Structures are given as C-alpha cells and as structure tokens.
Length: 417
Image (tube, rainbow, N blue to C red; front, side, top):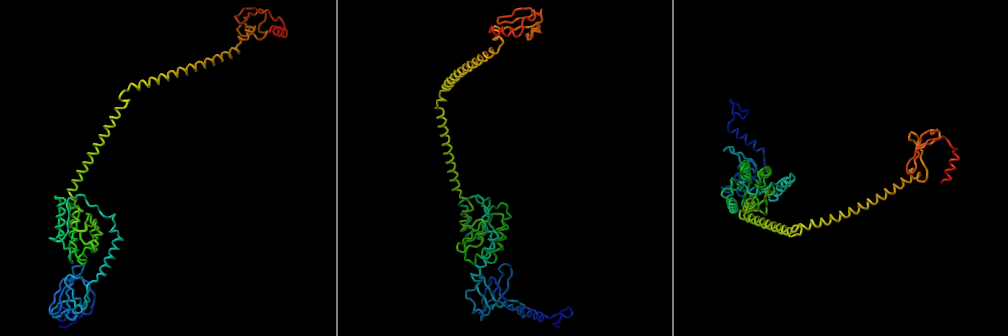
C-alpha cells in the first residue's frame, strides 16, 4: 500500500492515515485557549483532564506532564476558569487527540472585571439599564414564575416568605443550574418556558449568593439580552451585594436576597387588610365630619331671620315700594307742571302771532264773496258782497267801490293808532 493518493484500489493503511493526521495537527503549533476545567485527575504525577468552552458545548481533553505541573499554580482544580498554552497532540497508536499543556493559569480577576465593564458600558449605551424601559410589577401577581436551583435554599426562602405574606400565592418553579457552564443555557430555557405561560405575571431569578466566579453566568450577554427582551417583568434575586452581576442592572427590579424578592413581589395580606381598615376608618370619619358640618350649616341657615320670619321681607319691600311710588308721583307732578308751563308759554307765543291780536287793536279783516281775504280794491268792485271780521264777530257789507286813495287811507289808519 502506497502513501500516495488513496483510492478504492490503492487505499491508505491506518498507519499512513494516522501519520498524516499527526503531521497536519503538529503543524498547528502552540495556541492559547480559554475555558473551564470540567475534569481534573492526577495519576503518577501527571494530570489528565478536560477543558470546556465557556459558551459552546465543546470539550477537549488535555494532559499535563509532571515536569510542567511543577511550574503551574498548585490550586488549579475542577470548575476553574483558566487560560492555557496548549499544543494539539495526536497519539497515533491509540488514535486519540489531546492537548498537551505547557502553561496554565487562572483567568485574572482584572481581566474578568475589564470584560464585564466593557459589556456594562455597551449595554448601558444601548439603553438596557434605563429606568424608562423597566416594567412595573403587578400589585398582586396571579402566578409567580421562579427560576432557581433544584432543592435550593433560595427556592425555599422565596416560597416560604411569599406564602407568609399572601397564603394563596401561586408559583410555577422551573429548576436550572445556577453555577457552572450549564447556568446560561438552562436559565435561558427556563426563562423561555415561563415567558410562554400566559398566567405568569412576574418571573424571579433567584440564587443564594456565591463567590464572584460562580456568579459569572448571570453577567452573560445572552442571558442579559433575553431578560431585556422579555415581556414579563423579571426580578433579579441573586443575593450578592459586593460583586453584583449585570443581571441586577438589566432586570426590572433588583432584590438584595431571595427573601427580599418575596417581599417585593407579593404584598403582605396583613398590612393590606390593615390599610383597608384604616382607609375605611378615615372615610367614615371624613363622611361623619362632612355630615356634621352640613347639619350645622343648615341649622345656622334655619336660624337666620330670613327663614325664621319671612314677613319682614314683605314689610321692607312694601315700605320701599311706597317710597318709590311717592317719589314717582312727585316726579310726575313736577313733569306735568313743567309741561303746563311750557304749553302756556307756547300758547302766549301763538297768541302773539295770531291775527286775533291784530283785531283786538281795532283792525278788521274783509273777506270777499269767496271767503278769501280781500287784498286789492280791484277784488271788490261796487256791489260786491263782503264780510267784515272784527274781534267779536263779523258783519255783512256791500262794496260801493273805491272811496279814497291809499295814501289818504294810510293816514287815517295812522291817526287812529
């Protein structure tokens, strides 16, 4: 068998394949990787273990020879988050692949804090921490969704304290890992389950504290974005004040402990009943006070003169009407007198202008046969019947023609006057 191109007629041997795999893998060289130690076993001074990816379900085996182990931190153990310098090693005889470790160290706290701070700034810039986007919790939830570890103290604390405050409170509990690499996927699945339940009004994510590294899952970006996108209000009850996970900032409400979460989510039935009793007492006292005030006001109104004896109103209005009537009569008399004087004055003026005043001075008015005043001698030739009007009446006359000239007549009139 040749190590040339492999065909059905000329296949490679297993050894050739193994050699080629080892050659390809050896060319990768050394690389730095980060992960979580999920298995750690020492045999004969050497260490054999497994390293798992922090986000994906991917695991590789590793081995640490005793000569290298002597240079590594002595406190390395299962569950630690580490950075390691490894070189892929393919064991041809056994057909297995493992990572030979040359260096390994804990992920520095400073590195973790720096990453969390960068994530914090990113989420804050997107508005995920804003108070304006946080939803209000219902006053009395119909059902409370609880995500916590199985048979954990956090679960017992939340349920016990909530039932003490409101005995009929209803829970739907979904257990999930709250530590280690399974935390994020299991909490995400539990959150999705409770979000899909229309009877769940609020979701509590509870854990009874822990050290900083154990809480890293509650600062995972995937979980934070899922909580921010949830339509049901979410309460973070991780119970760690010194190193708060970012879930506290994204959640709609942060509770300092699981017990505090129960107190914040469920009202105290005793306090509410006392509040109702106090409110009823205040309403009763206020209504009694208002009724008493109105009764006193009505009594005061009834005691007034206007309601006790209404006759004085008629008397006062009668006197006032009498005064106005007298005043009206007085004004009317004055008006009549004034008008009478005006009429007398007008009559005097009229009489002064009347022809009767002329007749009273000895003059007469001669009327022709047609009843018109005679103005010219030509209008009264001899034989014309005339009417002579004087001050006290009229006399009949007959014209005898012109008897004297106008100049002589004017002189005669002037002599009479």
